[in-house]
Length: 152
Image (tube, rainbow, N blue to C red; front, top):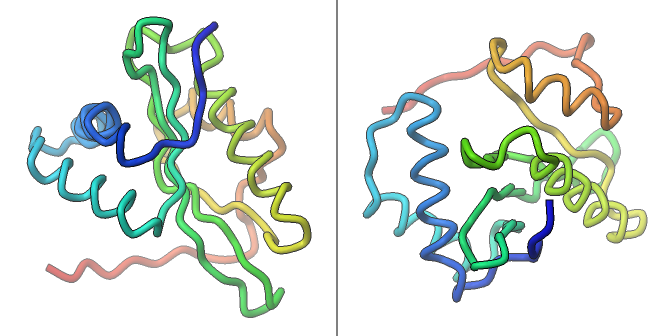
């Protein structure tokens, strides 16, 4: 699919916010554009996330991915957590997700020997995403268990 894929900046906050709100709804959250706006603006302003944004020829958002830096004590190197990958309903199955993922992988590789790995999680029923990740070389973790403690 043609269009522009770029690293998002504060000037892109409104487009990313809209996509982020859709993403949260995809995972069963109520639409909350104010919450989404505050969250995305903070990430972009503080530069504590890397967000790649795919736009169509008219400047409409087609999808985004959001990466957070983390660290591996075992490897004594940085990791990236691919926290969010979202493609709008009308842009699915045309390669937008793959382009965003390849951009994230290229970004990690461009960090020379600084990035040990990219970590991600997806819902067990999200088979389309699983197929994409596995086609790009991601492996299902078999050695470590993932635990979660909700703090609310």
